[in-house]
Amino acid sequence: MSDFLDKNPWNALRQFTNARIALGRAGSSLPTEPWLAFNLSHAQARDAVHHPLDADVLHEQLRAQGFESLDVHSAAPDREHYLRRPDLGRRLSAESRMALAQMSAQSSDVVFVIGDGLSAFAASKQSIPLLQAVRPALADWKIGPVVVARQARVALGDEIGELLNAKIVVMLIGERPGLSSPDSLGIYLTYAPKVGCSDAQRNCISNVRPEGLDYPVAAHKLHYLLTHARRLGLTGVGLKDDSDALLATAPATPAVSDDSKSAST
Image (cartoon, rainbow, N blue to C red):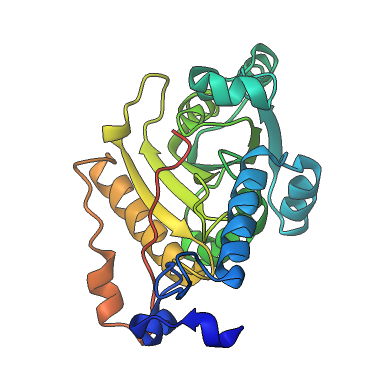
């Protein structure tokens, strides 16, 4: 069978990327192995979109790390509504809004929200390690309770941050799965969060996962943006991420690939 397989001359480049290049061909078709791999990746991406977030496990992991946690749900009652009605994922359910409004929440410097978004895999796998990586750099910050949000879009963090009197809200949310990355996490920062904030008022760090932007580098970028957001009193188009300049003077870190995708806005 190998006699019928034509190898692509670009094959040596495959060591540098996960992109589907130099797959070879068998006649006019793909070889069986890359064809099966493509179908597996496609199935994993679909699973990532529909797999439910295990909020109970996340709460246990947060408590084990010493974080106080809260549980909320968006106005989307289930996954079907979430996918068909993005607007419902941007607002809290009536029950969650009432629960947060009735809390005597003290003002905090930052509130982290973990949302399933379009990949509960990402929220489950990447959020806790990222929080562990960034927390030592936030020793002088007053961190509010970590909120676990189901059926969440990015803008859901605005309402949560407003109700919890947060100066900055950081949404950790599963990004739209790619065919090589069903578990990629996005980070969205919003200063002075309130209902009605636009995407121009946020900063985004994308592709957080060990195979992409690893936890130490993502934590470095997040700390940089948080520090300057607090200093300048803003996030979004007025806040530039110049953190790479600091990394250039630091000890070398593993190479990072940029596989940025749109997230669950």
